Length: 347
Ligand code: ASP
Picture 1 (spheres, rainbow, N blue to C red):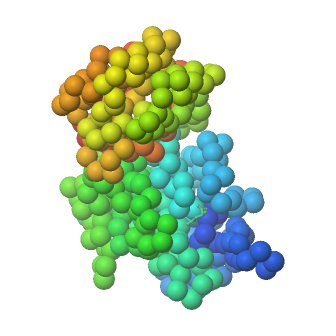
Picture 2 (cartoon, rainbow, N blue to C red):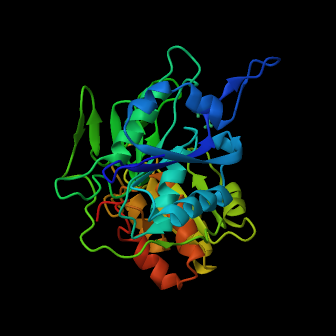
């Protein structure tokens, strides 16, 4: 194919998800299908004067099956093609999209090009699908540049319906609405209406270009523990004693609070003393942990829990996987948990 220098080069990485699914004729349940079916349903994409290549997961998956091995595959596809393309669009199921976006943001150190993750609520073959618009808009965003020619987006982001969100700030909000994602503690990176309106104040701006450095090791010795009224000392102790666990994201009430009864902080302290890292995040969808606002939060600080501030659960768990995967010391992990690595937490 003849190319001109100004044609943006975009690599589509198709992992699966509803966007490419079709109905199983017997059960009527949606199941992943191949990329040819997907792209044949988006004829308009040819109207973009871009060079668009693709890589596909074989087989494509429902994102409920996503795991760190798949993140490695995505990261490898980006690393191997980094210099050849201006931007990357990852087609992904919505269920674990925010986890993948968070994980990739940590794995792709020094990223200076767009990695736009998108999918859809309705399969691309359906008449009212949101997939066609999401795919085309994601490709346009991946190709967009600033006045100085640099990529407009220089980070991992999620494009869904009317918004572009920072990947490691995003959460899936709805299993029904076309606007399925939101970043509750960070502004949108762009609003999509008649035009695509970028928020330059919110977009990451790389000031010094360094070679892409991909961290492939994600250590999965981590888990969530979600507090609820009625959780017993026995159950909590049992959960914290799960074999091989190095890090726990403790999902607490409100501003980072848990029961004030001594058994609660005793169990947390015992775990911390055994070497488990406990990251305190709020169950609230908006706002963050203010650990010393209430006695109940203050006791958790004294027990050795680290405040996750306004980090999302998805970013918290993948940040722990990434930090344990780096093989760094406990004190280094503590230090990184209290700062932003790639915009995942308000410093
Ligand atoms: N279960 C699907 C997935 O995450 C849901 C979707 O894509 O919207 O792959």
